Amino acid sequence: MSTPSSTPVIAIDGPSASGKGTVAARIAAALGFHYLDSGALYRLTALAAIHRGVDFKSQQEVASIAATLNASFLEGMILLDDEDATETIRSEAIGEGASQVATHPLVRQALLQRQRDFQRDPGLVADGRDMGSVVFPNAVLKVFLTASPAERANRRHKQLIAKGESAILTDILQDIEQRDARDRARTVAPLQILPDAKLLDTTQMGIDCAVRQVLNWYAEII
Ligand SMILES: Nc1ncnc2c1ncn2[C@@H]1O[C@H](COP(=O)(O)OP(=O)(O)O)[C@@H](O)[C@H]1O
Ligand SMILES: Nc1ccn([C@H]2C[C@H](O)[C@@H](COP(=O)(O)OP(=O)(O)O)O2)c(=O)n1
Figure 1 (spheres, rainbow, N blue to C red):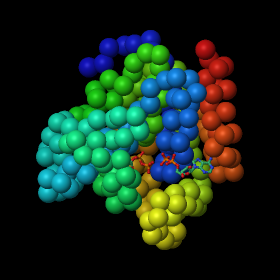
Figure 2 (figure 1 turned 180 degrees about the horizontal axis):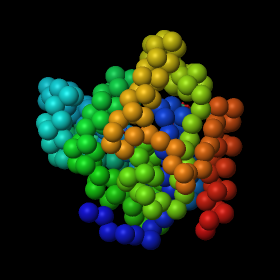
Figure 3 (figure 1 turned 90 degrees about the vertical axis):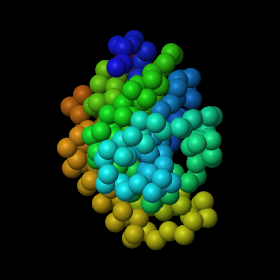
C-alpha cells in the first residue's frame, strides 16, 4: 500500500468534460509537478477488455486486465501493449466503457496503487472522480471542477469537431448525463463534492481564469 508522503498532491475531481484534464495539465506545467490522468487508466482498461473480447460486466476478468495493464505514459503519449492508444481512448465509446468498468470495486482496487505511485517529488496534480476521496485523501488542495451539463456537452462537441470527428450535440448531452448519473450513483468511490473541496464552477469562466483560481488557492496554502 502507499506510504504516507509529504509530496504535495492537488486533486481535481469533477464530471465529464468539465475541463479537469486541461486545467490539471496546465497547473502541473505551471508548478513543475507530475500529472496523473486517472481516467486514462479506466479508459485503457476498457480498451484492453475490448481487445481481449472480455465483457465489461465480468468483474473478475476486467480486474485481472486492470491489474496487469501494460500501459505507459510518455510525454503526452499513452501506450497500451506498446501501441499508441492516445487518441483511441478519447472516443465517447471508450469513455462510456471506462465508466462501466469503473463501477467494479475489484477494478478500482487493482488500479489504486498504480495511481498512488504517481505521487513523486516535487508534487502531483491528479484528475479524476475519486482523487480527493480515495486515492489521495491527504491531498493539500481538493478542487471540484464543474460546469452545467449543457456547457460541458458544448465543450465536448467542439473538441470532437475540431478533431474531425462527427458528433451530434444532443447525443453528447445524453451521454454526458448518463455517465454523470452512473459515476455519481456507484457504491464505490462515487463522484461527489467533498466537504473539504473547493468548488469551481466554470460554466461562465474561461480556462485561463480557472487555472489562475486553482493556482491562487494553492498559493494560499503553501
Ligand atoms: N473553462 C473552460 N471554458 C471553455 N472551454 C473549456 C474550459 N475548460 C475546458 N474547456 C475545453 O473543454 C474541452 C473538455 O475539456 P477536458 O479538459 O478534456 O475535460 P475533462 O478532462 O473534464 O473531460 C476541451 O476542449 C477544453 O479545451
Ligand atoms: N478517478 C476516476 C477517473 C475516471 N473514472 C471513470 C468514470 C469516467 O466516466 C471514466 C472516464 O473518465 P475520464 O476522466 O477520462 O472522462 P472525462 O474526460 O471526464 O469524460 O472513467 C473513475 O471512475 N474514476
